[in-house]
Image 1 (spheres, rainbow, N blue to C red):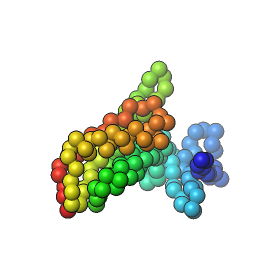
Image 2 (cartoon, one colour):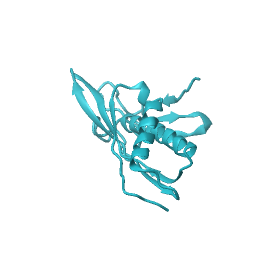
Image 3 (tube, rainbow, N blue to C red):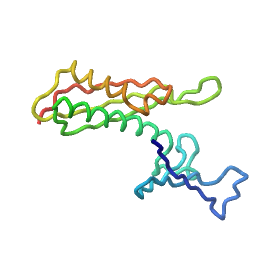
Length: 157
């Protein structure tokens, strides 16, 4: 199974480029026609060379980890006959410098899940998240430590 994405950037005709003051804004193209405006993080390359309204690679990385985890969690919940009404996560990544190189070393997922009807026990929810994590293709592809911080307030609809 092969996956692909197209990334496109073009220099603005008024930019010198050699001075390092060029726009980092670019576009990601995905199958199905989705276009995503992208840029370097303004925390790394200041504006106006970065575009804070665009997705930066670090945010996309966190979203990919979170999304993969969620998709496996939903699948597991469905197979166990639990009805998930709402799933929300706020993924946070810690960028650190190690041996002169920056890396996202820790990712914390903070999923909040609202079930309808039969509500699983806290132990069952933890087991489903652990299984989702162990099956996540993205999590299995990276070295960063991924933590799951559950929001365990019972929300039943």
